Length: 275
Image (tube, one colour):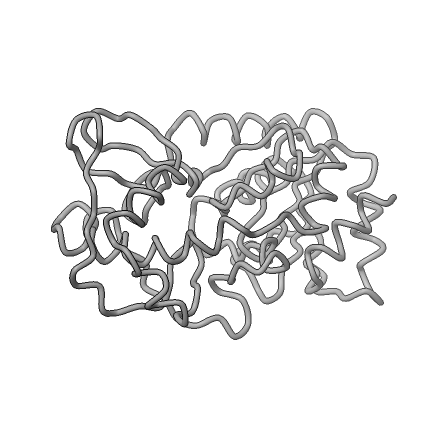
């Protein structure tokens, strides 16, 4: 039975269901809003049309637009700090923490068993030689090639995934791979790309194990709009594993959950960890 609940009804029951059980936790953008990173689809979030992989590789203009925006967004996003929800999850130390976020805040908070389902924005990959490098190094190259760019656009609003609200990107210079001259891309899964199969299989294995150990799946801060996260909720429900969803707003997984709670992620996770 699904119960939409606040602190007065269902909150304590959901905590009681989760405490003392093996856990797999799936997190989304709603967990990082307390760190100052905007949400995708939470209440009041603006509509957005993220660049697809096909668009990114199609033209130099598309890559110029992406990197011009990302240069500004990353300059701010990299200063975000883990919030109490991240810290609480590190203390809980679930069997597996699956995150749809690319901000790396779970790792910085000390979580040990993390699958970054969509990669990490702090890493860069060459589409030619597949060499990986640190985003900070590319950030320095972008700043050298585009002096004054950040200062001229300091007013633009930040979007999720280290993007910003900027239309005019003409003149921005994008470097190629220093090793082979190939195209550089953030090492994240764009829309139009598939999550690498080994990551998905590791997550499925952890979710399947919950059925044997009497565990539960906790979803925190995800609307489950895209299948990359929803499939794990469906898998747990099919296995008879209880699911608890904590999110501001409805999710696609609500009909499959034992409890759905419209409360803050940090609030709920701190309460769970304190028990």
